Length: 150
Image 1: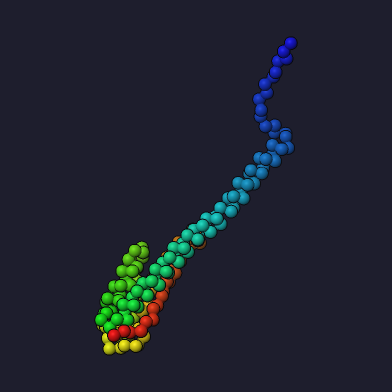
Image 2: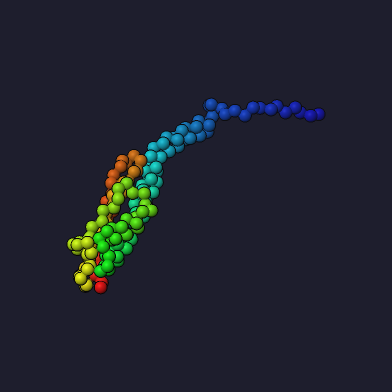
């Protein structure tokens, strides 16, 4: 003789302690995630923004170095040096053009000044946009000091 099997529908028992604990734990995990999420977003975007700023700072340093090499030549003019610095930073999306200063006077800074030091300084403003932290401006600058050549 075959005994009939009764199929029971599996529903969570509201009076079961294990079911209530699992539901409250998942609710607590959701609240904890909601509290930690803004910190994670702040950390993630902070890392991204500072890596962009670090890359731009390296580009500003390279631009100052290249402009300084050109400024050391006696045949170069002030406009040529400024253009070299701007060209080196042309690939970066900058809000304002870089500020290039050369410490020696005249249109040809190293003309008849062999052995003198020429300093080229390049400055750029970088905007940091980090969620929950606000916007701020970071001034990136670098200078190159080279000896004037004949």
